[in-house]
Image (cartoon, rainbow, N blue to C red; front, side, top):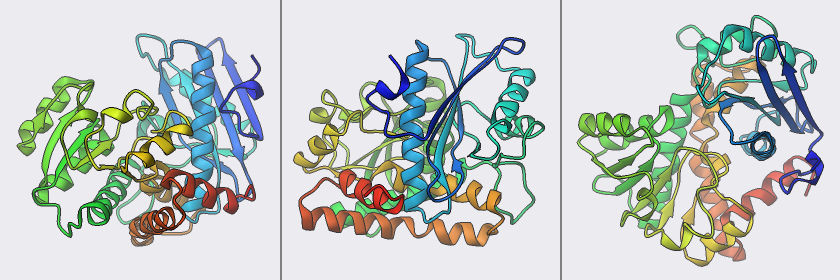
Length: 348
């Protein structure tokens, strides 16, 4: 099946496949839209069951980046890179250099950054081969660097906004939040909520990591397959995507789903399923925009740390506008956000 026959092909401008035998690189770069500027989005290093899954992931993630950048008010389009990892997860400098050369061959249509499985040090290695990269180490007070903490802060603000919208809570003390995934984003979110006095339950496929953070914060732990079904006030997905689907949505007991994972809805129909259940949903590419605001402004040279913080602080207002339109129109919040984003990139 060709890429344009896949269900998640959405008039993508380009889908590039790269192979470098010497380094072992197998990679995909999907460019969804450059209507607002160069297609910006991180590169994911992940082991997929097959190559078709990697292409599908790149298609979904790049479309999400188009919407995310547009809704964040950035003059950037949407793209995404995926490097296919071996089962052992080995990642060499030669492989990173090969990916850098692949990015450079696109002449600036795609700007890469950090994502799952890629570190700031990895970005520095990629940057030896191309200037079309962001998320590099920076000095104090500057934009850029690791986007994880900034993403976590934006998700935290969005979770607080959701608690106010759905629960009428102005403070998070005593609010039970079930967090799926406690890496850079989920872990940062957990620490901020714990400081507010929220009651936390944590889950991660790395059980030791979840246990260590729970001990640090005085939180509870449950299995990764249980977290979505807990009797909590808010469920916060912060791992991989497609976890909200026809099987999981009927089992959700929380009244709110708000987290930093990309592509949480497995299919467009799942937006309606969430809406019909009366679950307040924070569209993922709106709530998790902090990271791209951080590295996007770094690449564009348009802001310092204060400017990044000011723009991230706008996330709750965008969510409240989406929820207000959803209530007025009767349409799912995810669909409302999609329509807003599509208009911004000229696809309304």
